[in-house]
Amino acid sequence: MSQIAQVRINKTKEVEEVINFLRSLYKYKLLDDSELIKVALSELYSKAMKDISINDEGHPYYNNLTPEEEIGVTKSLKELSQKNTTSFNSGSDLLQFVKSGK
Image (cartoon, rainbow, N blue to C red; front, side, top):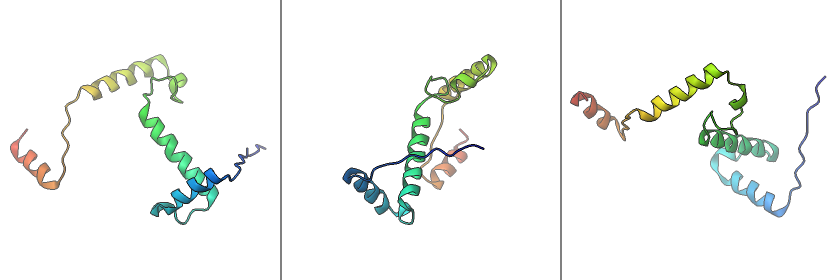
């Protein structure tokens, strides 16, 4: 059987302030303290993962790629960074772009 590791956090004044701030945000109102901390850590992790490339040593898949996968990922990232992309602020912007035939 595997055991579940536990993390204990002392509820200091600073921790309480952070919890109260996060709880004041609409999307966290119904979470208890432990759920709120789990969600906050998950969101922090997701943001950090967006900020690093799969080829960076800090990425969890860095050491798990085969040489072929590394080449493929590097090639895909290079192609993606070279693409010219267009963003639209509204449906009418998109419609104008489609009508222009670009």
